Amino acid sequence: MINSGFAQSALPSLVEYKQVSADGFSVLSVSIDNDSLLLKKDDGFYTSGIQIDVRKVRNAATSSVSYGWRIGQELYTASDIKLKPEQLSPSDHPYAGWLYGGVYKQAFDASGSGTYLGLDLGCLGPCAGGEWTQTNLHKVLDQPLPQAWNTQLKQEWGVVASGQWSPSRWVLASKADLSPRLKTRLGNIFTDASADLTLRVGQLNQLPEQAANYLYLRGEIKFIAYDATLQGGYFNNQDLGLHPKSSVGELELGYLWRSNSYGVSAAVLRRSSGIKEIPNTQGMQNFARLQFSATM
Image (cartoon, rainbow, N blue to C red):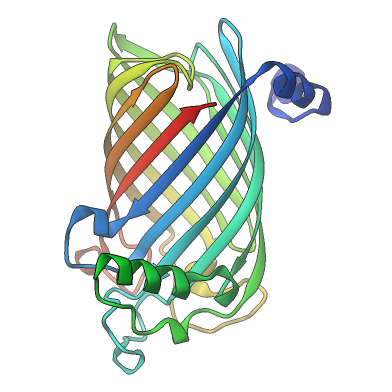
C-alpha cells in the first residue's frame, strides 16, 4: 500500500515546481537510438529514435528532484527498408512514426529509491514526419532510401501517461551495485508494464547528476497490452493481421561518464521480436544508443 509520504514525494506540486525552478540548475540531454550506428547492413523494425530533454534539477545532500519537458520522434519500418510495397510480407512490421512532446517529474534519494511520472501528447502516422526524417537522413549518410512509407499506419493523435518506481539500490561492493525498477505506460499508443534490473560497476554516483564513470548491464522484461506501432491507432480499427507478443525481453550493455558539467553514455541493445508472427531468429533487433548531457 502506498503511504501518504510516498504519494506526496511522487506527485508533482506547483509549490515544489516553483522551488525547483528558482533554486535548481538546468540540464539539457539528447538521446539517439539507431540501428545504423552499429555499421551493419540491416535497417528495420525499430530503426531510429531521438529525444531532446530539458529539465530543472534541485539537489540536496541525499535527494534530487527535477521537473522537465521533452520532445522526441520514433521511427519503425519493415524488416528491410529496400523492400517495395508489393514485396512486403503481411507479417512484416508496418511503417510507423511517433512524434511526441511531454512533461514529467522525477525524484530520487541516495538509497536508490526513486519515482517518475510523465505525460506525453503526440501523433502517430503521416503527421509524425517519419518519411521526411528517414529519407533525408539517409540521403545525407548516402544510405539506401526507404521504399514503402506510403504504406505507413493511419494518423491518430495519442496520449500516453507513464510511471516508474525504484524501491532501493543493493550495494554489492564498494564499486558495484544492483538496482531494480518497475515501469508502466498507459494510453492509446502504448499500454505496457515492465521490470528491469541494472548492474553498475565502477565509480558510481548516488544521485543522477553527480560525477560518475562506470559500466552497466541492464535486463528488462516488458508485458505488452497494446502497441499502436504494430496494431495501428487504438481508435482507427486497422486490421493489420499482426499481433504483439505478450512479453518482450531486452538487454543493454553500456558505459557512462559524467562530470559536474557534462555527460556521455554509449550502449548496445538487443531486443527480442515483438511480433507473434515473426520468430526471434528473424525479428531480433540490435541497435546502439548514444546520450549526451550538459549542465547549463
